[in-house]
Each structure stands twice: as structure tokens, then as C-alpha cells.
Image 1 (cartoon, rainbow, N blue to C red):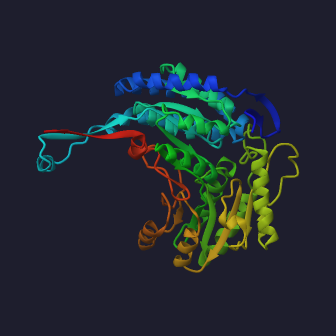
Image 2 (cartoon, helix red, strand yellow; image 1 turned 120 degrees about the vertical axis):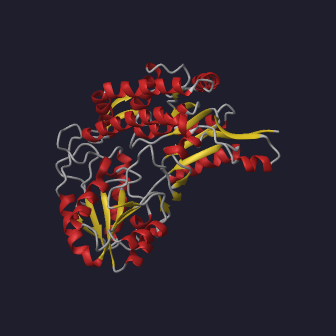
Image 3 (cartoon, one colour; image 1 turned 135 degrees about the vertical axis):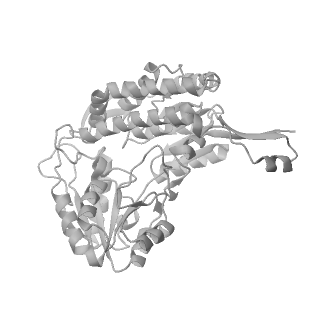
Length: 462
């Protein structure tokens, strides 16, 4: 895949970029290693000042940065602005909290004495340059949620961004440079996926984090395992959205629309499978289909657009294959199911609700990355849980019920990295983020996320 900015609303190639050659990669690896020896010795106050400076730049330039995101990957401008703001808030959160999150821990004195020691503590120390392989769907946020904690922990960062968002990748390097970070603390590697293995195998790279497809995760994890290097993976999701009889059905349907089409439906934690109890199915289905049908598809830069184009031409083709396969096997499109006729250019697809889904359909098993929802009817809570867990993924989940016993059961039984009750899944720097099963391993954000790329060191004194 070429490294290029292509406007997904028109299909026009706006700019192409030359990939780094091996000599260019070597220069950046050497800088990262050198910068680490300096950055790891800085104090939290200095690191926090740098990160706050980066946040201030983002906030000051939010309109221009958001427009870049929209032009490069197609999200509606209002959502791009929200992404920029979220990144700035997360930077400030880690600047404020990192020192406490990484404070030395002191074991019980009785345990220290039992070990034969006079004193002991546990210290969190940085690991070194961390390689981040990041996707295009939240091109700022996915990077910031790795970079902010990694830099606050004293690591340095190497970003291999998706090849269709090079302008965003370069914006990020420029942002951290202008914020005052020493040369080499945060660098963008404009390279194709074929260059990842050599970078990851380089002994100067301490660890890797990847957000992306299951296939990419398998490949990177295999290399990291062979090199015995730490890896964190956030992969796909096919999140269930359960609606049970005690729910506020109208509110659930309203949130369901947003949960499915946020970021043009291209979000790992977007609700994708809507599992509704028979007692409230008709009411929910009518409101949900009406809401999806009413969405405005169009120019993502225009005010009032709800759904913009898919980010890539291949992404739309993949989506069409899933929908067409389902329709051929008997599914029904309650709305959508095709390209919009008034958008001949660009990679648009109508918001779609499919019913009559059966296990032999690909969409029942595979992640659907676009504004397409599958709607299921169940007769009991037990059926709802079984269907929700009938997936190789386990990133997040949504459950709409006000029954405390149902909530307790769902919290215990749903196989996911998060359970959100009566609201839409979202990420926040205070909460761990990650999944189970083929959605990956490890955690981003929160204390767990900042500690992922730390050397947890036991210090003991006789």
C-alpha cells in the first residue's frame, strides 16, 4: 500500500510520501535510543511540563488539526474536533496523575522482615524505545493513548502509523517536537508494513504496542515473542448491545444509533450486534431502524453530516462483501444495504440494519467495520448472554437493564474487557482499556496502561 493521503470523500490523491530507506530508519532508531538515556533520567515535573505543552498546542490548533483528520480519513468534522479535544484532555490527565500511578510501592513490614530484609520497595522504571503500530480510524487518539503514558513513564516512542494517514503521523511528530521534547523522544517512521519486523527485531527497541486487525496482531506478536519482547495488542471487536425488558427502550435505541455509526461505524468498540429481548424487540427495532434511516450521509466537512465515507476503498469493498453474503443467505436489510445513489464519488455506504442473521453468515462471525448493524431477537436473558458470548472477540459490551440481579449476572458472565450499563462504551484515561479472546491482551490507559511498558523492579535491603 502506498503511503499517501487520499480524500475518502472524493477518492482524490492529495499527497504521496516516500518511505524511509534503511539508512533513514537507522538514524531514527539511534536517536530513540540516545534520547531514552536522557529522558529516563528526567523527573515527573519536567515530563509533565512537556506533555502539557503538547496538550496546549493541540487545543490552540484544534480546528486545523481536526480538518486534517477529516480530510485524511473521513470522519465528520464535529467528531474530529471531539477527538482532538479528547487527546488534549488525556495528555493533561497523565501529566497530572503519572507520578502517583508510578510511585514506589512498599510491602508490608512484616513481609519484609519475613524475607530476612530490613527494607524493600517496588519501583516502576522505563523500558526503552517502544514501537507503536497504529491504525487510521482514530489517528490522533490511538497514538496519544499510547504516547502520553509511555512518555510520562520515561520511555521514548517510535510510531509506525497506518499508510493512509501520513499527514497525521507527521503532525504528531511535529507536535511533540514543538512542545519541547528532545530530538528522538517521539518519532514517526514513514514505512510500509514490510519494515515492521526489522524495526521490532532491532535490539534497541524494547517493546511494541499494536492496535489493528487480528492478522496484524498475530504477525507482530509472533515477532515480539520470538525476540522475547513485551507486546500489547488491541485488536478487533464485535461488541454486543443487549436490550432487556426493564430498559428505557427509546433511550436505548437512540444511543444504539450513535454507538453503531460513531466514526462512520469504524470503531473497534462500536456496538455491532444488537441483541434484544422479545418483550421489547418490536419497539426497539422500529425506533432503531427509524434512527438509522434518518442519518444524513454526506460531506464530512459539512455541518450536519452524521455519517461520512469509509476511510478506504478496500474497506468499503470488505463491508459490501459481508452485507452481500448475508443477503444471499437470507438476511433482510431493514434499511440501507447499498451505496448511496447521490454519492457517486468517494467511499460512502448507507447506514444499514440487517435482520434474520444466522450462524452460517460471515457477518455473524466477522467484525463489520462500517455503518452496518445486525439485529437479533432472543427470548430470555440466558439466550442473550449466550449469543453475546458467541464471538471470537471480547473487547467491550453494552447492556441495557435496570434490574440489579441482571446487572450482576451480566457483569459476571459477559466475556469482554468492559461492560457498560445503560450507556455507550467509551474510553477514558482513568479506566483500563483492552479485551479478551481475539480482541487482544494487555491494557491501555489508567494505571494498568502506564505500567505495561515499565520494568517493575523489586528493591531489597539486607
